Image (cartoon, rainbow, N blue to C red; front, top):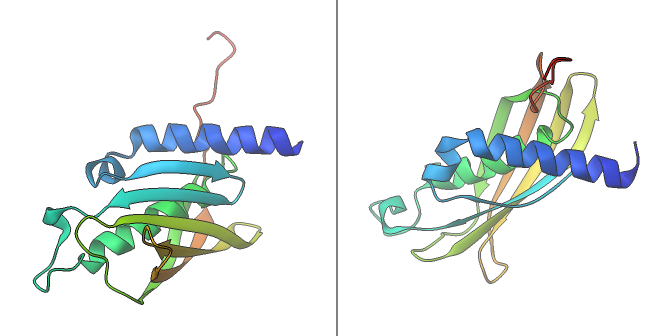
Length: 149
């Protein structure tokens, strides 16, 4: 597969997955870019995402990183799920911040992969670091065409 074909496949997988991802859409996430083993997702911190201290609830930060991770590990058209994730919160995200989660594949072999996600705000300030481990299951991201379609 050429680099162009791999990039086109990753973009098609990202588009298809995002169209079905009502959870990410409901949180206002935006698919910014896709590449083989990589994804960038954006989200703006809304008032309904704030916790009692007036900063973005960690669950929303985790969800943003988890979505970027999911898109990155599904970029090869192999249905892939998380089998473990962790996050370190580095700095608070505030109302109106535009966050970007950049997921990068660190390793992929057999049925498992490891991905790191970095969340930054609009100023490039590090907000959180996330690590996810993926597991390839049966199936694909893109719908399989049958001969009579």
